[in-house]
Image (cartoon, rainbow, N blue to C red; front, side):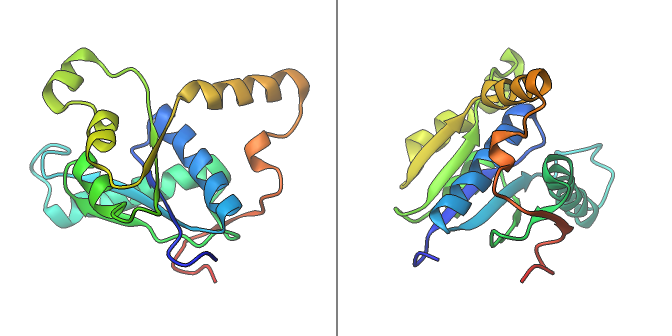
Length: 173
């Protein structure tokens, strides 16, 4: 593994986030880098009546679910160090991808106007503040691969050469 080589990816469960996770796993494997999936949560998530520990636990479960749905579990051929943080997403990603040698992978897609007006664009924030390379992945990349697979029956291109197991990163060697 390259000294300090990391691929940081923002995770929120959206289709664009899923496309970013696929690309980040591919990049981490290709670069022999540590994969750092980041999921940010705030006390504003949910109904406001649940304790903070429950909100954090929900965020951790959401991270596990993304990998379960995408790959059938966490890949065991990539070192994974997940980060679950109480913070706004843009700041959490920029603070995690704090080395010039990092690669920050984000999903990019159309946001609803109200959400963008209230929260701004995470991708725009990261591009403006990150000290490392930022790669924005469109969900169309994932959709194109899925469409090709459906038409031809071929394996998904981002799964070739990877061995996926359903184990949590804490148990991976």
